[in-house]
Image: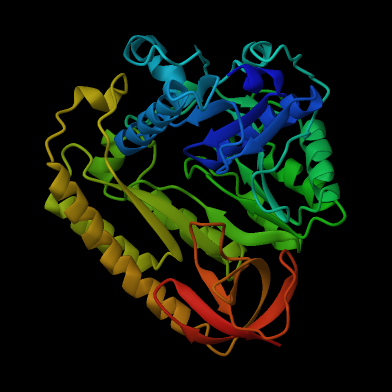
Length: 435
């Protein structure tokens, strides 16, 4: 251990959960780097001596993964392979007192808004002037841009406000500064993220200011694609769509988590909307931006979900033919208002509901992809894997959506845009050739 402590510290950051956590880890790494501390993301070489685990506390599976990851790092510390293990993020924010007792080997625990306190563990100063100074953990051609923190919504199933607090928007000036810096680093695609995009600006500008932000961002030279994630359907600001239609570098893509469609479930989930309102909104979205890709996420197995509710959701997918759908099974989270309900659906039945719903969407996705054969699309090349290139259209986000497989003897630089003619189509992927 003596030789180790004589060496300069090297910090490995392990990130679990969502893209918002990823941005937090990148900001932490930028702060450490600015203080002269060697830092790396997801280091597999074990040539570091300090670990920061950025945890997720959203649902049971995520919490279990976070705890197991912490235990793995503590085991390495016990073997003398690590000097320090620090834990931050949502799980730490939500269960810190319990975790302190259960895993005392962790050197310090931090919540989601305690970056300056964490930096003190490294004798580092928080540098407020570092707007956008972060070390990307993504490939250099795309990045996430977190436009706000927290959430003011009161969805009955969601524990996010418990871990992230109320909604706080960042200023347009700061976001434009960060986006410009990312573009100078080589970023070509920026994905806007927040707990709730459409609430942006209400706190600081007293209006829904996402359309204004989009205009400023789309003016940045060199920013080829801007993508919108997590737009709440209730009181959706339709002006967003006008900007999307007018600005070429805003992807015709909208991620709008609906969670369910049957009115009893929407009411129980406290979503402040109805099936009719959602159906009309989607029709309006498609009318204003022809060809737009609409993505959603759904919850299966919410307390009280009936066979009629499942059938309603399946029929809605058939009728609406959404482009992209993801699904979670309900997780009964303490301190949410849904926790007062009886979690009356067994885990295997929740999974069965989810599988049944996704089988409907799988067929829709297959049919929609078949319609793309023979068409040519502009795609961004994400990586080369097993001798083939994997790319995405403007209608597909990273990891959660379709990929375009390209077989090309000619080298394709990662991060470049190329035009690809689709030659084959599957349930969730496409194949094509460069034209």
